[in-house]
Length: 298
Image (cartoon, rainbow, N blue to C red; front, side):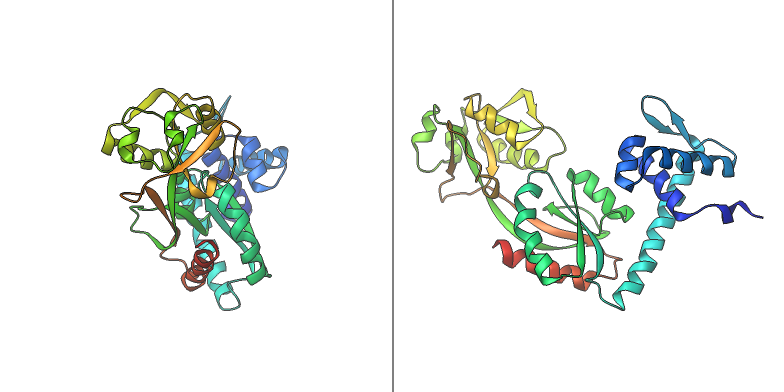
């Protein structure tokens, strides 16, 4: 009997997830199975194919054969999901599970606002939420492990469609010891002599803040990059610099921290869109969700 009859889609999912995360434990968690089960199934797949797919060490690396097979497995999983989606659209696109992603400087503040609304509007729909950096969200959209994702505009991706859902101004976070904290609003020129604290690479807020500060020549602290907004807040509260905070994230306060808006002459901010694959059969449903998000947060 041909070996194809011994392989199943779940094994392909395990393999693709391990390849993406490069870690058996994280992959097992993502696939909602135990690590021994996941490891055993991939080992079984290797035995069926008669060749190793992974190099197992402190980190997991694909063999040459593994890279080729993972690429094909991703296509198989994507097409299988497309078949399920086509069937689902003839019933009700707002039933079953839908995966929604957002980047880290948005997810903790927007998800609590929109998820209750979406749950109420679509009680048969189970939302699975994912928080990742923008490049990972785009990759997961393309491979089909995400249905929709909230991304900061603009995104250059001809294979994705989007609808704008949010326009959000930035505020400046300052220590109360900073003389600028006495101002009711901040001009961009006020930042010229300030030290700018930023998030690490991969956060879209970093690029947006750098673009603004290039206009006025503010100096970036190149010896420090934070992993989260909370770290930035603590550093600013210690008067080690200033940072940009999206208005939605400015609800969290610290005793020695203040937020100030920009003056009316020029207000830096960000636009956010809801993205999905152009090939998705649920484009109409995603546009409806985008509209619901827009009216929830505007």
